[in-house]
Image (cartoon, rainbow, N blue to C red; front, top):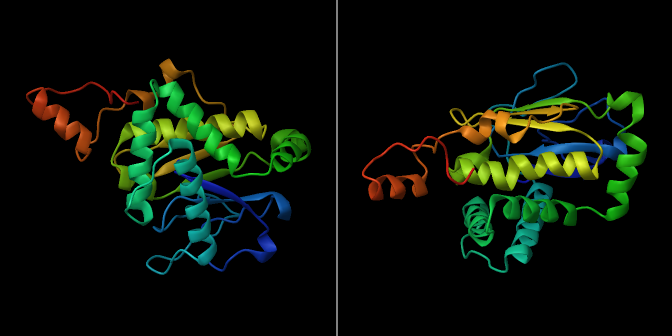
Length: 237
């Protein structure tokens, strides 16, 4: 939501000193790193290491990748914000949402952005050579992000769903050969990554039925127009 829970390939042997996660079971050249925030994350099983509370600071490579992701999003949208960092990134994500005529348009645009981050041969090699190993067991790892900065900064269920959750699930399944279910928690901003698990059908996905967050600026404006009438689910989701 890599992305967003942002994802980028790395070699574990040369990884920066403060990775949020380093799945030790994955081959060195095909491990993936979750870059959701500068907040701390914690392991949910053996084999993962977590950044220590209050000590983690994004490294140079993290900043470079965030800038790369933003540049790719800007190319897709055709517009950039004057604001730096996550604040500017969220403004570009909002513009991506407004640019799409439907939620499917936004999802497809976000998938294109994710694809553009990787050399085509790398995705194909991973899908053919790595994903099938052990019946998918190597690729099927489970990750828990304690606090997603992308969700926290966007304050929007729709942006989370259409520019992070659904595109990332589609990207991993269609281009990396690894099913992925992402389960964002809109109360504490955590997110569960379940690799190897197929997402439910849209009508059965409870994330798509979430109401707008109280702090969502768009929801605040809608409530004023509608006379504080409750909305059953986020209209952007």
